[in-house]
Image 1 (cartoon, helix red, strand yellow):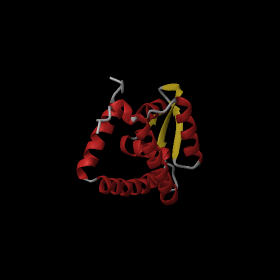
Image 2: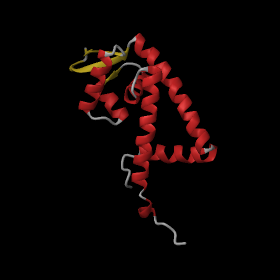
Image 3: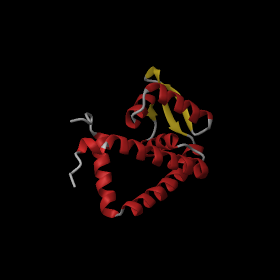
Length: 147
């Protein structure tokens, strides 16, 4: 049997399909058990671990554009998960922090995703899970993924 070349394996397509499926499953679990979306949980985790952040910093860490971050934060503020205030050092900027409800939601979401991650680890097995983790970490942190 001829060996399949990397270009024929369509890695991008497989990664994209897997990411969508996993994202939908995580989103469904998070909505059901923590009453937040996967995107909201990412913001909650960032604020829980690193504290108050500027909108631009949130977008940079989560690889989201300014309009997406603004919409996400506005919805989270309406839901009572975060509080947004003017940055006293830059009147054009805004700072975002967790509310107490946001902190509780982050803790619930963390439990949900820990369980989901444990299921993925079990499904892949320790060796394959480590390989996937390392490969995706390289892709997620590489500033030029085609290099």
